[in-house]
Length: 154
Image 1 (cartoon, rainbow, N blue to C red):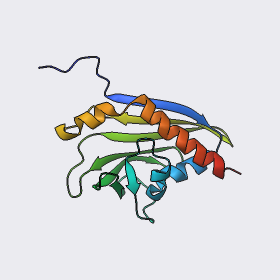
Image 2 (spheres, one colour):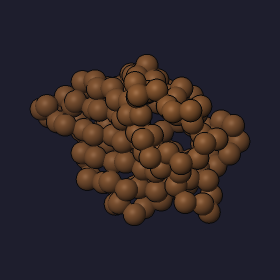
Image 3 (spheres, one colour):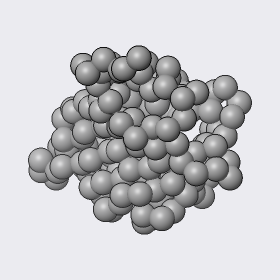
């Protein structure tokens, strides 16, 4: 049985946020902050002190289902880009990517793009969850992130 060709393996949402790219990026690159704005209601907790600084870094996140994920940072540009591949502890990443791209519009406004790419996902146990990740869930994360960033903007 073949997959339908119209199935979308890359989902993306974009939003303008009334905050600096630096303020927004700090909320994304600090895993301890991520559960406060997660629109998937999937993230429970991350220990403080795991702020991402480079590709090759790894941070651990506890999920609401009680499992932990090791997130392997594969793309990084301070204040502009961060992407990671989740994996079960001690295992290779399953092939799905969470990516955040920030484009400063000016000193106090930023265009933020959030992308979920599961085109290389190899773990069949995660396919249902991947298919359930919609533009709306990414938009929910963007909205919550905007509230946090705009609330902390000077």
